[in-house]
Amino acid sequence: MPPAYLKRQRRAGLLFVLPAVIYFGGVFLVPLLESVIGSFYRTVPGGATQFVGTRLYVKVLTDPTFWQAVGNTVSLLVMSVPVTVVLALAVALGLHRLRSLKARSAWAAMYFLPFSVSLVAAALVWQWIYDPVYGVLNHALAALGVPPLKWLQSLDLVRPSLALVNVWARLGFDTMIFLAALQAIPAEYYEAAAIDGAGAWRALRRITLPLLNPQIVMVAILELIFNFKVFDTVYATTQGGPAGASQTVIMLLYDTAFKYFRLGDASVMAVFVFGSLLLVTLLQWRLFRRQVEY
Amino acid sequence: MAALPAPGRVLKPARLGWLTAALVAAGALCVVFPLFWMAVTSLKTVPEIQRLPLHVFPARWSNLDNYREVFQRQPFGRFLLNSALVASVAALSSAVVSSLAGYGFAKFRFPGHAVLFFGIIGILMVPFQSVVVPLYLWINRLGLLDTYPGILAPDLVSVFGVFLMRQAIEVVPSDYVDAARIDGAGELGIFCRVILPAVKPAIATLVIVKFMWTWNELFWPLVVVNSPTMKVVTLGLVSFTNMYFIEYNLVTAAAVVSVLPILAVFLAGQKWIVRGVVMSGLKG
Image (cartoon, rainbow over all chains, first blue to last red):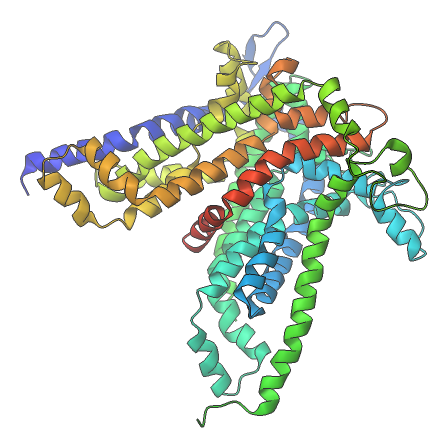
């Protein structure tokens, strides 16, 4: 091909991607760098900034409130991510077994419905369901003879209760990913396995799960990221309470930045969130890729 | 037909089939229940929601007092308009910029191609909250706090969109592009007349999903919006809880108002949304 043509092609390609590159650079890359730089500066009264080295890191990373928030975030993660992934897998397998395609897509649509609902609306409706006095959940439990529980007001229950809201909100999305992957597995594999005398359980372990591995890894990572960043459900319901028991890192970051205007401290948290998410995601990706080989 | 399975083997999955169907149905009802509960509560009066024993259905299905109250207490119509405007602009700009970039990444090779593409995909790793403070300071410096451009600033393009459009445009045969080029069409002309018509479904997916996401967003609007007239619907919803006693009949009515438009979009475009999810899932 003539060099002039190639040169024009290169320029055209660059021009096509330029708006997106500039936008992402300006809205994500530059602010990310500013966050890192900002974590070394303290805002003094009057609005000026002062370089303080790693002092803010020491301050935030030795603050028990911060570590409580980290602990809460991790405990929310540990409760909701595995449950969401396993439940979604189970639902997808169940839906996939339904013979009638019409029934399958109708039930799937019901599972998918919460995907369209904002987390704020979801959280508020769940708060109403969880209401200790008039909530339908405690009514239902009373019918079974269980005394009323303070779902969002007790130190022990608040995190599982919030985790359940996140599971509810995310289940449909993950189910759709798994269901699509299941439908892409050729039926011949199962027929061959049946001829070889493999039962349903063996077929699941030897065919379905290995073939679904990429989706399982991806969904687990997506859920991890989602649950790490979760803010709306907590903000709309407990605001981190009771006594900080549902305070997440993101809630703390929000309060630090926009309630107390300690922007330097908030930047340290922003760097922490970015760093740990990157680390955990890369780790999870490597671990899963190797381990899940059935 | 030697390969025909033994009768016992056929019977067992069939019996399991009923159990599976029952479990799937029970699970689906559990998933839908909160939405159902939201709808019925929004039609009840305060004495009704506090009545013992609990009544599932409202006494009067035509009781719209809660909805009237929601619109009287807060400019909820304005909130809906703000959300619709912000979400529409975000969806459209996202579609335009993402298709341009998707075409560039899918059909051209240029220096820095891989670095730029993976750089953009890598942004998925950057939680929005990591950039929110500098972004807020920029918006403040530019005097855009409490304005539509301020609310829209981080929502104009999404990484998902660029990825989706690249995937979609990649499978458009390059012969079409080359044929148009030989016919003397300009690059922008090829983009508009060859590429865009071929990837209409992907564009529909992107527009619908992006509209939904922007409509449902809380964090950034919470940061940039101060005045009641600039609130989007999620902020309006939260404002019903900033009281000592939460009136759930009103909260659920407000929630229904905020969810209904998006539910309509969702149901109308479900086919495309599933496509998008599948696409991001299978090729992720």
